[in-house]
Amino acid sequence: MQTIDNSKPVMVTGATGYVAGRLVEKLLSEGLTVHAAVRSPDNKEKTKYLDALAEKLPGSIKYFKTDLMEPGSYNEAMAGCEVVYHTASPFAMQVKDAQKDMVDPALKGTRNVLESVNKTDSVKRVVVTSSCVAIYGDAKDTLAYPNQEMTEEIWNTTSTLDHQPYSLSKTLAEKEAWKMAGEQDRWRLVTINPSFVLGPGINPYASSESYNIMKQIGKGDFKMGAPAFNIGCVDVRDLAVAHFNAGTFPDAEGRHIASGTNSSFGELASIIKNKFPNYPIGTRKLPKFMIWLMAPSVGMTRKSISLNVGYPWKANNSKSIEKLKMNYRPLNETVEEFFGSLVDAGVIEKK
Image 1 (tube, rainbow, N blue to C red):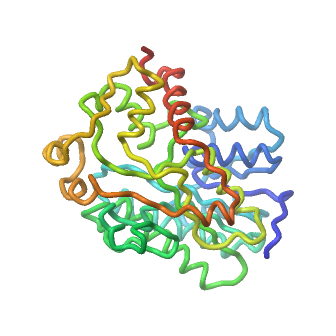
Image 2 (cartoon, rainbow, N blue to C red; image 1 turned 180 degrees about the vertical axis):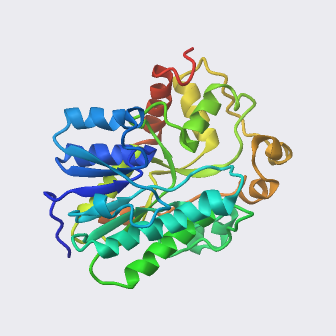
């Protein structure tokens, strides 16, 4: 058991990000003081959505200039905090240099944040946003898992710089976090391993792969049908609760799969088509050979198509339900509200 004092400030890295935005909202709603670690605290265009939350919620927010790749840059932001939430990590499916653009910021950034934790005596708890891709590399991997499902005991062993580099970056970063946590006994590490994050963010104009998928569906990229990609989905608002509980529950420990639904791209398309029938969305399942042929033109490798399309995706979320008291909202609510928020904001053309 480890008691956390919620009168003390908490630090959030990457505070203007998609996941962090809803986490900051949750922290502010609970009356906490948030030390928002951001790259450009003076950029009001970047912080205005967080500022708007702070104006209407009981908590308060203070900004600190930080950089994942700059040693010691989190020291000031972390001073006096008992809980640190490390959410910042690059998420993009296409990069020029996987080592430089993806692995280094994730791995070195995690090391940098935790080195500051080691120097900050007030910190008791660190919550790191990892991912289900630190558990599996490709859907085909899960066929060899017990019951063919992902659990917190399993690690991704198949991703490389050349194949699924984002998954590699999340795996290496989380392993480094556990290594550093094991080398001391003052602070406790808890990780959250979400599946594909969906749902309305605090900024409808943000850029992330989640937003990109919604925009692709809205503009007709799926009008011929949906690829048979099976995925897990979690609402960003539920994910904020998972982080908050991981940071405040006295007995929170270890890894936690945060995934509300085992789903597919086809199901996402069908939910949107049912709610928004005027959009050019096909609901038939595209043949694997067709996706394999098209892969290079849409920025995917044929190897990733071969190892993921048509394979099941199943994650066991029982630990998060039991230990973090998670109550995941229905997928249709998440998808309808996410797509609708982008239509209302003009990000997706209204029809």
